[in-house]
Length: 248
Image (tube, rainbow, N blue to C red; front, side, top):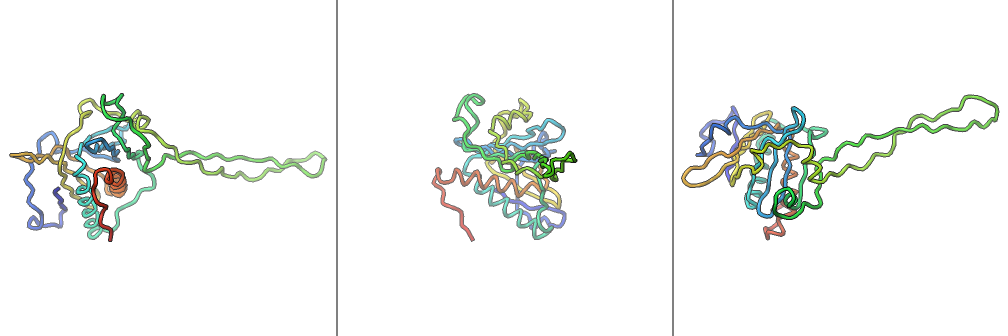
């Protein structure tokens, strides 16, 4: 797993040597505003979503072997720390642009032709459910006709977050045929500037490593991405026999 930090203030001498060919068709990269993390039987699938223009579109699908995920999480956490040292705290956002979903299993066999049905999805950021207000009319103590006073409008109790299953979420997304199968990667190189993080997903194959997919995310989305990756890995880690992470 390669980990790289780059911005205008770094010298080339401090950057690790990375030799990965960047094909022309991936060089420009894709801008994403959210990530859906799906756990399959042998791999993680990262669906990078862009919500403008509507409808929301999956702009890149990356397939990572299970063993790459803990290294990816570690590299992303290190880059977040480097970002904080140089630029301060990562900017936060009140509401995500799309729901982020972690699932225990691959998409249903009806969709993929293999694997187990998805089960018990968790939505990392719930959808907003609009509240309602009501006005209760009071009865006048004096039986003589007169205006009936009303109580001020009171907000209704907040509704529980709406849960969406994977099929409902993917029904709302546009997915082009050419990225249905995704792009494979067994390493990732992470960089960042003051406003965004870049992800170069790499295939380390002999004789030449190559970037299979390049994605950009605004820095405000990175904490949610790290949380989703950690949650997905912790759900799977005990079944693979990996030891728990070293806590400070």
